[in-house]
Image (cartoon, rainbow, N blue to C red):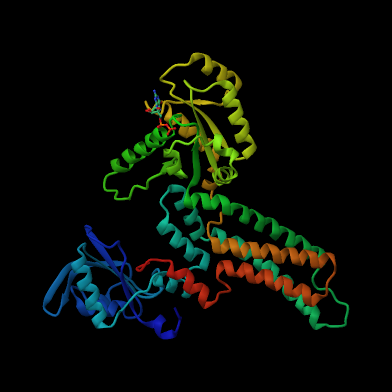
Length: 460
Ligand code: GDP
C-alpha cells in the first residue's frame, strides 16, 4: 500500500455493516467528492447545501431506476471520522441493493476502499495516533466486556499519552546532550547526568510495567487459558459441558444475538476463559498422573488457571494431597474442586474441610454450586485491576517496541555508568526515542503502516 497524494484525495466507498442480509446496511463514502457524488444519484434535498451531522430521506437512482429508499447521513470535513467529507447511506439490508449502490458509485468515480483505509485516512489526517488506530481494530474484534474496555481505554489515548509525555522529556535531554557536542572541546554540561539517570530509571519502570501488562493484556484479548485436570471419570467433560451449556443458554437468551458460539470458551463476569486441550480431556486421561511426563508438564504450564477436579466418591486424602503437592510445584494458580457432592461422602468432605478448607464442592452432573465455582475462578484470576482503566498493552507490535526500548534504555544507563562519550550517549538516547516513537506512530515506515491497516476489514 502506498500513500500517494492521489490516493489520499480520491473518494472511497465500502459497505460498513457486515455482509449478508440484515434489516439495514450502511454504505460509507469518504473523500472530497463524497457529498457531491451522493448528490448526483440522490433524489431528495440538495445534499451539497445541507449542514454537517444531518440526516436526509430520499431515493438512490440509477438514471430513472430507483434502487432503494435510503437515509443519508452527512459529515462535512473536518468534522468526521476521517476528517474528510463522509457520507453514510443506510439502505435496506439486501446484498443486491448494496451491490447496485456500490457499483453505481464506482461508475461515478468512487473507488472501493482497501481494508482499514477509512481508519488509515483518519490516522494520516491526524485524527488519532497509531496506537489509537490499532485500538479501533481491537475494539472491532473484542468479544468480551473486558477486552472491549481495554481497547476503549487505548483508543481514548490513555496509553499513548503516557508514552508521549515521557518521550518528550527524553527528547529534551537528547537535544541538550547534542548541544554539548556542538561545543566540542569546551567542558560544558547542559544536561545534568543525575537528572538524566533519574528520568531513564523512571522510564524503565514505566516500560517494565507496560511490558508486564502484556501477558495480562493478552489474556483479556485471547481468553484465560484454563485446564481442567483430574483422573478419568472425575467428571471433567461433564463439568466443561455444564459450563458451556449455561453459556449457550445465556447466549441464545439474548434476543437478536447472532454471535457464533465458540466451543470451549466461556464468559465469566465479562472475562473469556479458554479451555485448552479439551480434546485430550475427553479422552479422559489422568492429567495429574501424566504430569510426570515433561511434555504434559510444559503444556500445563501454559495454562493461567487449573481446575483440579476430583471425584469425592472415588478419591482418598493421600491422593488429593499428593496431587495438590504436584500442582503447587507447578506454580500455576489452581482451584481444588471436589465433584459429585450429590453422592455424599461425609467423611472425606469433613476431612477436606479440615485439611484443604479452600476446596469447592460441586456436582457437575446436577449443576450444583457452579455459581460458587465461577465466583472463585474470578477471584483467583483477579482481573479487577483491568477495569480501573490502568494502561495495558495488548498489542504485539507495542510489546516488541517496548522490549527494544527497555534494551536501549539499559544501554543509556550502562553508558552513564561507564561514562561513555557524549556522541555514543546521544545515540543510545536517540534509539530509545525511536522505539518509543514507533508505538505512537510518531516514527513510522510505509511497511509498518501497510501492515497495520491491512489487518482491518474493508469498510473500517
Ligand atoms: P471425565 O473422564 O473426567 O471427563 O469424566 P466424565 O465427565 O466423563 O464423567 C464420568 C462419569 O461421572 C459419567 O458417568 C458422569 O455422568 C458422572 N458424573 C459426572 N459428574 C457427576 C456428578 O456431579 N454427580 C454424579 N453422580 N455423577 C457425575
